[in-house]
Image 1 (cartoon, rainbow over the protein chains, first blue to last red):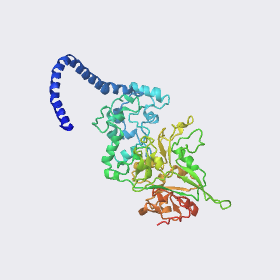
Image 2: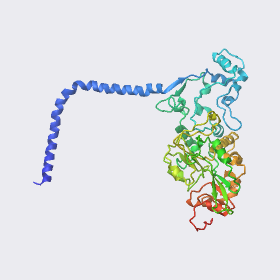
Image 3: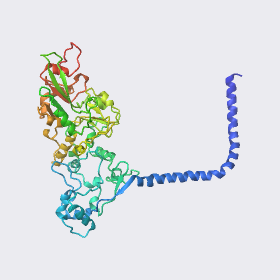
Image 4: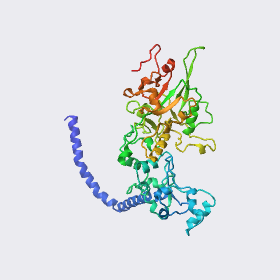
Length: 237
Length: 271
């Protein structure tokens, strides 16, 4: 017999005996592990559950610090008083730039003195109007420094509604808690409330992908040689 | 609304620098640095480490006195188009940090995207790109004077002249507010253009026959924008980088200095 045939024979014998050997070991093994299997499985299940809780509940809580605004503001109440909707206070300047949060000078016209019974108005008048100090509002939609956003292009050019990106803030009675990312320092409104990143409304998030998605759908521009999308500097500075 | 919004003006912004007018004063360099928050160091004596988006070079005809002549040559980023937007730096960027925008002809650099591999610096034949070896440190109180329209850069990334595209953004803002879709020539001008006391720099849209830059160089768009004005030339024309910065000079030796020629070689004819 040649060496090759010998080897083939040997290996086939080995293969035939292997299942039998395994079967005999298995019957003995089952008896031995019966006691430890339960707690070990339970340990891993509990560990997985604990990790999920840490990842989805505890970590997001730790990641964002909660800050409150200098005082509360009622958007709905003010919307009833003004004629021009959001643009009454958040207006465009003549050079096309956007004013953002109103300055003290705009509020003083009505709030020279306390005129209501609201505790927040009292804080505003006493601490800011009388002292001639600008209100340090925390801006929910504040973008990173590298972002250029043109309100004129969206509101005037494309005729978009403020609520498409900002949501129905104009109908709210109170300001929500400002959540600041402890690592990046950005507002939670940029990432979105939903930690898994699921988006239900157009105003749920303000990330670059959200901007790019809408730009692709509505403008269809492909001027960027690298990305075949809208040019990078359209939104970056 | 949607259709109107999509119609954006296709431009090719470019610059023409008249070298016979340039006095080498360096006002363009100063204007550029302050406009674009360009960082500087306490000791700027080592020019290899300086960041100068706009840099004025001195060239000479190499002849001894009294035939010696010099010429100052301001060098911003050339915003090369290459072939179909494949400029040298854009082609090699692995991070999609630098990009050619075919609607404006601007080569943009997105600082937060750049990770500092410096391939683009190696690819750029004009040395127009600079690396931030350190985080910028501003003299006390100077942060208050930084332009909010240009984001400052950090250590470990590359930066370059942007043709002041933030001014283009602001010009478009104004146009949108006034219900226009096009911007006027004077609404978008780079900082160096406006700072030049000799009026040597002209900026505008090379595609628009009404703009001065177009009239000055008469770019032949069928031949990668080659100038039809015999006094106009581009730096290293023969590399095919297709730059959008043109130079003007009535002096033969200056035009010849714009490219590398083998000794005794005749300058290539424009055709």
